[in-house]
Length: 286
Image 1: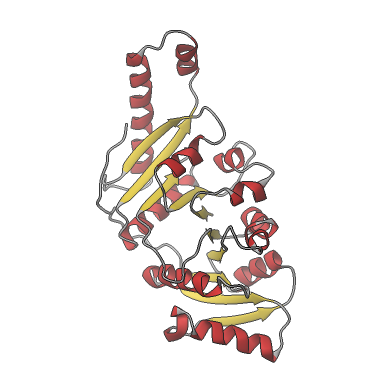
Image 2 (image 1 turned 60 degrees about the horizontal axis):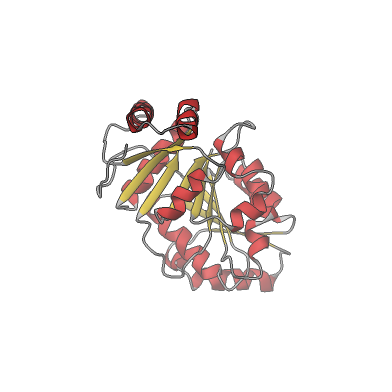
């Protein structure tokens, strides 16, 4: 049902070309910038750093000083200061520059956490025209992203998430890439209610695992150096429970499209609360 590996997946497909980086003035600004720099440098993507606030000389100077103190100091990006609602500004700038990624971040213990990963993240996640990367605990000295998990749904748009996950594992030289799929089964439910037949359970998981590997292959991933794990969906938290138990560093999922998508199952209406308990960084793919 799973295959352990410590090799990276090979892929030559490009991922992101331009990214909007949210730069709010907080104690973690340098950490957010450095985390974004590490990712964008490896991907070869161009940064567009955006501060939401009133455009005035002192604000501009403060932003430029923050950039000079970060790892972006040798990679002059586009810098924008614009007033307005944070989510609206970030989304509009992404549209204006045809960016394919928005990056934001915060630390859960900081008082401004809700500002970053609360209503702003909810709006970005729901309405951004592009992918979104949220750092839950950004570090000034970016840590290694050793374990990546991609939650797979058997939908056409989920194939992009599979490819992005493979690219990230390659570029970041991650030790393990998990492809997970949560499923329901009336047979397992019946077996659990009665006497459990281990052979039946094993066959069900093997069949599910074969489906998952087939979907990954159909997504264009020919290298089989990854871990597959099919999860019996006993609750809405099954997928994120796996994320916590395996200490995943980056969780990748396809963006919401319909009420029955995995995103809407594990991130229900109270998205702010769900994000506050997210066990890893989150990459939402569009």
